[in-house]
Amino acid sequence: MSLGRKLFLGFISASLFGITLFGYITYQATRTAQLDELKHSTSTSARQLAVMVTGLELDEMHSLLDRLHRHLPDYALLVIDRQENIQFRFVKQKIDTQTLRYIIDSGIGEGHINTNEHYVLWSRQAISDSPLFLYVLRRFEKNNFNALLKSSGLSLAIASLILLLLALWGAMILTSLYLRLERQRQELKHQTLHDDLTGLPNRTFLVEQTEQRLKRNLPEGECIALVIIDINRFKEINDTLGHYAGDTLLCLIAGRLRDVIRSDDILARIVSDEFALLLDGVSQQAVLATTTRVQESMSKGFLLEGHEFYLGASIGVAFYPDHALDAINLISQGEMAMYAAKRIGTGIAIYDETHNTSTLEQLKLVNDLRTDLENRNIQLYFQPKVNLNSERSVSLEALARWEHPDHGYIATSRFIHIAENTGLINPLTWWVMEEALRVSRLLQEQGLDLKMAINLSVWNLQDPEIVEHLRRLLEQYRVEPSRIILEITETAMMVNHKRALHTLHQLHDLGIRFSIDDFGTGYSSMAYLKRLPISEVKIDKSFIKSMDRQPSDSSMVRAIIDLSHDLGLTVVGEGVENREVADLLRELGCDQAQGSYYSDALPFDELLTWLAREHQHNQQ
Image (spheres, rainbow, N blue to C red):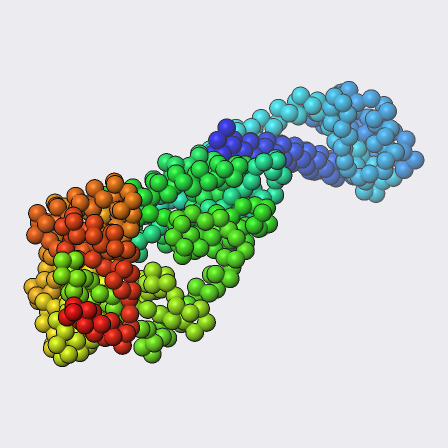
């Protein structure tokens, strides 16, 4: 039975009880009122008769009362002396002697007796100037007395009907009001425990449910797992396409996550682009299988505003009771594992005690990077690109290096990732640009004709100030734009493609050249590259390193070189580590090579020494 029906029937039952109680009280009040009226009438009659017989002799009194009694058949009349002896009586009603004796012996001036079959009312009055007392009695059969109540029965029925209608109306109003308040309470509770955008449970709900699940005893072989899912590159899309597009993407992500979990698993959105899964009663192998499905689901493209975006996810896993014994710590350990997965690039990480220290170190690194960037304590290294036919350097790639006072050199991929996720990537890129153009000018003044390659992040292509900023630097250091090559990755063009392409064309109009870095690791086709204003393709080192041992890699490199040349592009092989790979690239028609076989990235002073040595070698 529904809550509304229960409430309605409850109100009606309470109302009927109230009406019944009202009827009973009204009945009792009416009966009491009728008795009081009869008592009053009897007392009045007794007083009047006592006055009438005052001063009469006994025989005259008898004669008068006899005549009066004939006209008052409903009354019984008694005259007694002070010794309570009956002098005479006039009784037509059946009032037994025992009842008369009780009334006389009671000595009460007026009252009534309630027997099983009738009521007897009496009033005693003293006769003035006489030792006698007059008793006036009335007897009513109970059936006759109830008939007296019929006069008020219609009023009682009407009052009861009105009360019933009021009760029905009140029941409906109160039920409706209660249901509305209950619905509002449930909605407020739902809003408190759920995310408004996706409709998923929020962190509060997740904590409550986790605490409840942790209270039960787990069968052997089962565990409770808390999985934290951080969506990669969501911030880039949200900042470039706007919050509406970001909200739409979050709803798409939530829907896709629902499709890969069980119906009794709890999926929650805990903050921004972070989601959580609570898996109960599963094996650790099943948890890892679920995280794999989540990762595969997130690696598929999302269609948004006519473009397909590839995100991916970093996933952290914490198990109860292995890693924490309460909900708050279990979630915290899962988040630490997620940060570790993001930091080391594994995609999925299970919590380990070392993650606590790593997370604190990560926060410290962010602060240290900001400080060193402000103080210009970042170093710029340069790695040559060599023409494979002439074996002469034709350009340099500027590469930032960060030597931390406590941790030594930080991996470039690591601190670039920190910069991209903390808003430091633009200041870092501006500094690299300025230093690279300053060095380019110095090399020109020394008669060295080398182009300068600078890496751009996806964030830089979304910055509307990059064109004007680079224009000012070119003018400040008097560097020809054609000497500058900006290296971008395939994935950098997948975020807000229109804006990125517009920025590329603006920079290209300045005379700057572009190179696609790490080609082969993304999703771009040659037909797509044809639409970009690029002049160079750098084949990713993952194909180059093993091409002398893996025929499939060699075939892939050959195909890229041939197709790139068909498009009029220069081809650079990255990661050349030995002579065999360099010779093979030359045979395949590759234009340039870059790698440790020729030179590692060098600081400026060592670069000058290397260039001088190369020049001498080529002169021999």
